[in-house]
Amino acid sequence: QVQLVESGGGLVQPGGSLRLSCAASGRIFSINVMAWYRQAPGKQRELVAAITSGGSTNYADSVKGRFTISRDNAKNTVYLQMNSLKPEDTAVYYCNADIKPDLSLRYLEVWGQGTLVTVSS
Image 1 (cartoon, rainbow, N blue to C red):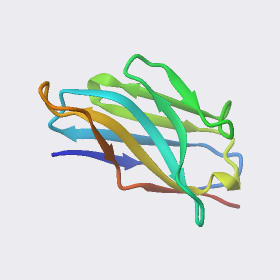
Image 2: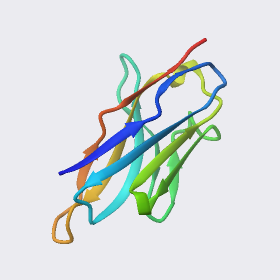
Image 3: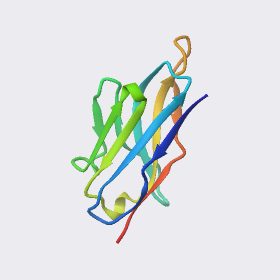
Image 4: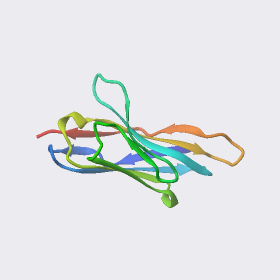
């Protein structure tokens, strides 16, 4: 069984910063892409940022220059550093990863349970 556990959400004032973490645990042979998605009330889930095992990244236009995604392959962990937060960044943030549990198995798409980020004064 493979799972992703997020941490680091909370309430922050506009202009503030938060750092989200997501650790993968369980039976893991390799992890391909790791990503952060978010879903605001009444809106569809959207990709925020993604990072490959080699470190290539891509970001949603709305967060470019403010958010930074990184990963520690040795710890099977992905991070999202969020700076200059805006009220419109308020959402539940979900970790996502493509994980191969065993050499002989295919990659599985795994989701975390989500962590709430609220940007408000």
